[in-house]
Image 1 (cartoon, rainbow, N blue to C red):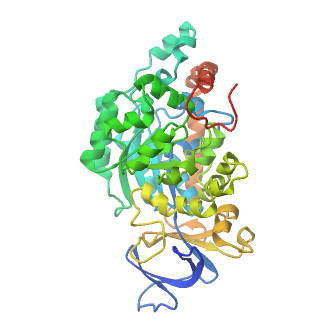
Image 2 (tube, rainbow, N blue to C red; image 1 turned 30 degrees about the horizontal axis):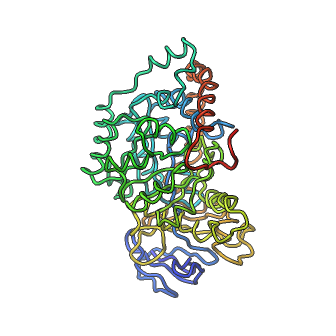
Image 3 (cartoon, one colour; image 1 turned 180 degrees about the horizontal axis):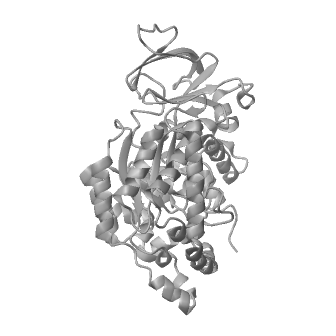
Length: 496
C-alpha cells in the first residue's frame, strides 16, 4: 500500500513533513516524497491529511465499558465495593459487547494499541476470555490483554473496615468466599498459553493480579512464576489510593514496591498502574529495575485518588505511558483527552516553576513511543519510521480544532479532541475509513451494548443493596486512612 500526499509527523523534529508512506505487509518500508507506486499496489490518498503514529492506551478495563456514565462522586473503593454486583455472572455475549464498544471508541479517537486488564466474576472462564479477545480481533486493534483477578475479598484489604461494621453486615462480608487460588492461576495460565500471539500477532497476553493488597502470597508468587516461565508482562494497580499504600505498610511492614521487588516482579516487564502514592525511594527502585508506569490522570481526578508524581518519575528515568483507565472511572477511552489532562494536572504541583511542569512534548511521547515501551512493543510501534509496524492515524487537518496550526504538538495535546480522526491502519490494514469501522457493524453493536447494560443493572438490584449498605462504612474507613501520617502527600490539599 502507498499512502500518498500526506503530512507526516517526523519523529525526530516533531514537525510535519510532506511525505508518502510505502507499506509492505504490516510494516512501514519507506517514508519520503513522491514515492513510486508499484503496479497493483493500493493507493490511499492523503492530501490535506496529517499522518500520526497510533496512540497507545496503557491501562484500561474492557468490563467497565457497559458502566460508562454510571458513577459520580465515587472513590476507587466505592467502585471496588460495587464491582462484585456489577461484574458478576456476565455472559460471554455481554463481555463481548462491553469490550467491542470500548475498542470502537478507542479506534475512532486514534488509539491503535491498548493494555487491557479484563475480569469476570466470580471467576474468569475460557469463554469470557475468548469473548474479550475476539472483540479486539474483530475491531482490529493491537492489544496486550491480561486476565485480572484477586483471591482475597476486597473488604479485608480496607484497614479498620471490619471493626466498623454492624453484626449483620460483618456476617455477610465474612461469608463471601473468593474462587480458589489454584483455579485462578490455572485459568490464567491456560488463557495465556492458548491465546498469546493470536490475530497475526496483534493480540498478546499478560498476567494481572488486580490489586496486590487483595492477593494472597500464593497468588502473587504464582503470577510471578507465570511472568518468568511464559515470558509475559505483569500489570497491577500500584498504590492507586492512599488506602492501598497505608495497607501495604500495615500488611508487609514496608512500602508496596519494596515488597513486590522481593518477589521478583519489579522488572522490565512490570507495569504499575496509577502509582500515585509512591515514595521517592519506590520511584527510584522502579527506575533502577527498568519497570514502567501507566499514568491515568482523568481517572485519578474523577475518583479523587490524588495527583501522580510524574515529574519525579520522568526525572528518575522511569518509563511512563498514559492510560484512560476503565470507563466507569474516567467515562471515556479518548486518548486525546487523556493527553490534555496529563499536560494540565501536574502544573498545579509546582507554582510559578514552569521548568518542572510536564509539557506537551513529554506528554506526546507518553502517548506514543513511551506507551509502546509500556506494552513491550517499544521497537515496533509508537513512531512513524521504516521498520516499524504500520499503525497509522490519518487526521483531517482543516477543522477548527487544529486551525490555525502554530505548533503541531501543542495542537495535538491541547486542542485536538479526536473528532478529526478519519482513517486508521493497524499493521498495514485499514480498520477505520471515513470515520467508520471497516470490519464490524457499529449500529448493531451499540444496540447490543445497551441491551447488555440494561440487563446487568436490572439483575443486580438485590446485590447492589448490600453494596449500598457497605458504602458509608467503607468511606469512613478510607477517611481514617486518608488522615493517617504518610511520607508523601498526593492530594491537592491537606486532609483534616
